Amino acid sequence: MQSRKLFHAVRPFISALAAIATATVLVFAIYFTQLGPQWITFLTGVLVAAILAEATRRSRAEWVVTRRTAQLSSVKDKLERETQLRKTTEKEVAAAKPRLHLIDEVLPTMVVLVDIEGRCLYHNRAFLDWSRLQPEQVKGRHMRDVLGVKVYQETAAVIRQSLSGQAVHYKRTQKMPDGAVYSLSIEHLPQFGEDGKVTGFYMLINDITEPGDVRVPAQPESSADQNMLADSHPEQITAQQDADRIRMAIEKGEFSLFCHLIAPLAVNSGEAGHYEILIRLMEEEEGMMPPGMFFPLAEKHGLMPHLDRWVVQHVAEWVALQKSQEGQRESSMFFINVSEATIADPGFPEFLRLTLLEYGVPGAALCFEIPESELAAKTAEVAEFARQVRQCGCRVALSGFGRELVSFDLIRGFQVEFLKIDGSTILGILRDPAKLAKVTAINQVAKKIGVKTIAEMVESEESIAKLREIGIDFAQGFGISRPRPLAG
Image (cartoon, rainbow, N blue to C red; front, side):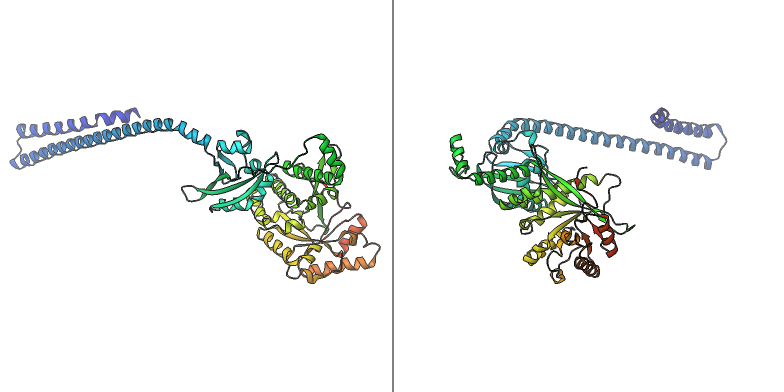
């Protein structure tokens, strides 16, 4: 490297020395030899050409140096101007920072910036004051944690619209932890990157509650009043307390999920086992509360759609966590029972799409169980629900099939992947020929229409052998396995 630099430094001098040497040789040849006029003329011409070439090279070198010097001076001036501009800008930003901070502190509109993954990138003081949260509970957290599971689920559809690039405006009421109910006007303004793609959205929230209109549930003024109320309406108080308990359990995630194996019956079939999701409420004093106790209350107080959404979200989250584990069988499905209220909920399909997108879970990982009784009572509504969840890639199963009079006309045009044969029928196949014939007929027709069958409440090895002989595809029950925690 040093020799190369030395060569570049002495190269002009070498050229000059070469020209001088050539001139010296020519002069010596002219004056000290007996060359003729022709040679003298030729050599003189060569000397003149060499001198002109050297002069031209030196002139060009000086021109290049002059031009580069001018360019360097121009760049230097530009750099000085940009440096001065940056310093001026920094001073202006520093001067404006207190004003911006003041605006951030006193602006009544609540502002939240949400990224494409649903996490909060920015919030102002108004939002913290109104939501009564600490900065660490908001900045960088997912909006599900910030807004709460219930509110996030209710606004899933508009969040999806915002992330697709649409501006959205809507109004809603919000109940605070102290019971106060406020009216809010909310706008979602999409944020776009340089490539034109959506990078998130701004959420602008205005409290439009009129003065004096904040609704707070009436509370008894004293313990004596509470005792009097409890004595007058003990059943109502107990039911309301139970409903509040379930509502709080949903919001705080106090439910536990269990899974029950749905095993393939054919030997060496290569089929993956599937799992039905079961939900239990964990009580601190009494242990696990069975679903027969809290489901009726949840249905009575309109909480089933929230509970079903909680189940879907947590199952999707669990599946996403398992995707990276070696040996996880991707073909396994998780069967989720949905309530009548969820089937009628128009916002559920949007929530489902958003949840699958958020966790990166394929729709084929979920299969929704619909009771046969619901299909018989509300055929059009159930068919529309099935159509929309199938658009998300999910599967559909019809449960309790064969409990009443079997009618395959009922499922004509209603596409399902699985028929779950009612457990009360399965329990009698070893002692009741009529029930055995019924199960056999259901399986034969299901095979013709391309639907797989699942036997429920399988209790013994004898039942498993008989079902395998009939050709039933899957079996579920204590004879197969007992439910276990989903996280286990």
